Image (cartoon, each protein chain N blue to C red):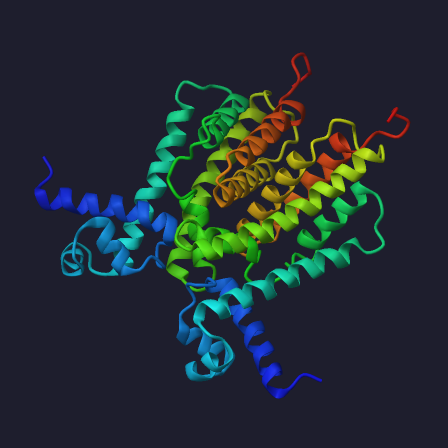
Length: 204
Length: 204
């Protein structure tokens, strides 16, 4: 059983993540963190050694939430094309909801960090590489299994996939309009079917 | 001839834009603005009524720089497909440089603003709509001229185009690696040729 202190700490991380994914992991003002968590500044510093340490834990939590959603989407899906389509649905599903309020925490952090916050940038790189690497492995497995066309470049597919989805998440958030997500989803789904999937009967 | 005061003002805007496009139009600390412009806080407030007013002018300047680059790329290009390809080159050219240091100011502002800064968000929406609208008009003209396939949806094309480029700009900046831009460029160029351009000899 977690102690009361552990439960409080976990709740601070969760609420900070929701706030910081909208207002910035470093940029969200301390007053907003106090308001979102319902805990005074002194109380926050009893649980976290610094504002920065809290930001990093909140980011880790947000990224883990998104990762959990992707992993759940992959459950029971076999075949590279089906896995890519399942990930598309998880990110840009017909309901238009996104895995985490405020958009993709990795993209948000990538933009926020740029060159001003090397520690934050490094964490965004690591999280993005996890996502990019997962897609590359799916494609490489699909090519090896003869399910995707020979010569398909896993890195190229992973980059186009992520770029298109992340850009669409940004547009959907900017306008409050999920149709941008649907456009990216249908574009990528069509690309998978018309250019990546090995046509049935083709020699592998 | 601009006065000395006007020149100073223009220089403040330009230097602030370069700084804020990396560190955030609202998030960049005042101390960093002072350092980047070489002008003390009191001096800045003689030229701009508020930190916010300076941020909005800097954003407007950054967006105008990007727009100028696109307009230049379109010079002398006729035909919708050629115009789309020229815009792709302008954004994700083989040199790997981008129109403005720190990435796309519209995307950066879209991410920074989210729900925390309605004024900033509105400006990001307006700037993005200018870019989205330009692409829609190019596609609509191409369809009307029989150069692009009938039934091509200008809004869909504009969204996919922007999403893929903006996402790739984000990845290229995150990793300091222009190959992500090249991937998006070759994907979209191939899409234009294989799915959007009306094949020669096809009935319009």
